[in-house]
Image 1: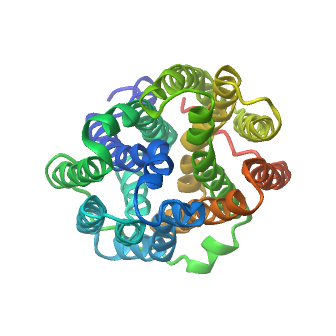
Image 2: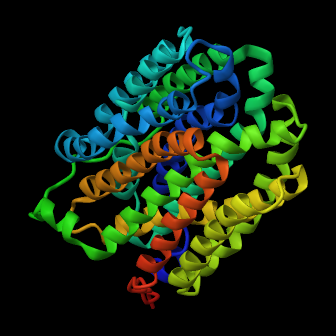
Length: 398
């Protein structure tokens, strides 16, 4: 019999296949979403209704509204009937919404398309599926791979979107998003390994809602994605006002995202291997807060905005990679689907808040008000997270 300690640090082949393929599904879907963000507020000015920044914010946030209504249901139903059919159905709905938005000629129909996109709320089922297919000792590594794939797709989208927008326009981008979702369905059906139907151990759903540490993480992801959406209402306009046309925005995003992604890795390793999860999380929240405050106060030259974005996205990437793993570990019983459903629901509420409230603040008070409001939210998060119980570091197997 092989020594468990010799293999415990390495994923099995099925675990690796499951993690890589599901990370790919996540990345394809998020790549499509992220490609819209850095160019939409600029494009909206060219279509009927797009001169109203509140409607632009609603178009960005509408996706999060319908997601927030359905994530818990998707996670719950995937616990009941299995992950694959739920994920494939959600991806198909998401693709339909993308094609509706691709055919839109005014802001109203783009909002309709975004609402339909949000009805394909599969993230909770995907995260639960990863938890089903990996052992607990490898779950943080698996979730970090998912977080890394999201960070990579974000970097590719932010850099590539302005160039693709120049080539194919906004309709082409939405159409491409739909194609990505169709490809992801194929990956789910034919590449992701099968898993047995989840076996239920009685764990009342209210346990998910009453778990204080899960509530901290849920509040955190709400704030994180509210600030992200609000940021992309304003930053593309700041770069354009600074003399950088939208087709050249990649010159800022490429070095910022590349460096932030590279520097995220040692932070995640330190959090997991050295039992520094709480310190790393608090530090990352601090970086997000500093980034928002500086965007609201510092002079907006191209160089200063790039430097501030690096600070913000270093914190963002660390949090995006580490929080889902904590959710899966803290979920009671076999309520992984329900716990990730609640987590992704609050994430979607954050997306909606960032778009809608951010658009309203931008219209009524100006761009500095957007960043100061986000800073207030992040400060509240820092206070809440400071009281978290440090995650238990599992003893190594002898």
